[in-house]
Length: 246
Figure 1 (cartoon, rainbow, N blue to C red):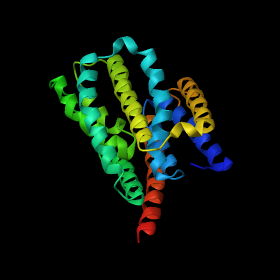
Figure 2: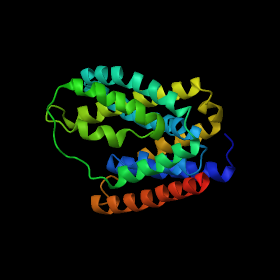
Figure 3: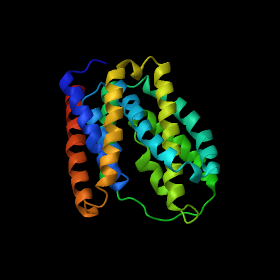
């Protein structure tokens, strides 16, 4: 994957800003970063590059809240996500890369505008097995599984510390599996180690800044900016891929 110095600088700056957003609000930054990466990077590198950067972010939260992990959820999720991801990578190899990127744009629009469920669940943790399978499948194509799995953690039997820890663990597992599977089909994201180091530092720096700015931005203002940015980026991706497919 060859990127210009300007593109690398833009991605690094975006990683800082997106990490600040995540640090301030606990959400949103990863999806925005996915959209920006998808608009600048070859399709086959979008998910593994995004996954590597987000792995650093999720691992930070995982380390801070490790003792709060609900391991029963992790077991069911892991059992489901492995076959889901393997199935996903086999389909990924066969599809036209322009179609995949078009689907990414549509996915980002859906995540941005479909109303989120706030219903608290008390069903069996075994529900996380099929959730894991679907997460593995969509994670290969779209990278960001956070918007999909988040509603299932809104449960009366999971306190906020457990939610942060367990959700971060599930996402970290997803990123590790994606990086490995893309490596098996010849996409080695670590060959771009200079970019990864820059993005890794940017994520850590952005998270630290975000923590200090926590609460400075109103939830209403954030959501408005978040939706506008994602909509513009996603429409750009969709329009460009439609033009390429015509």
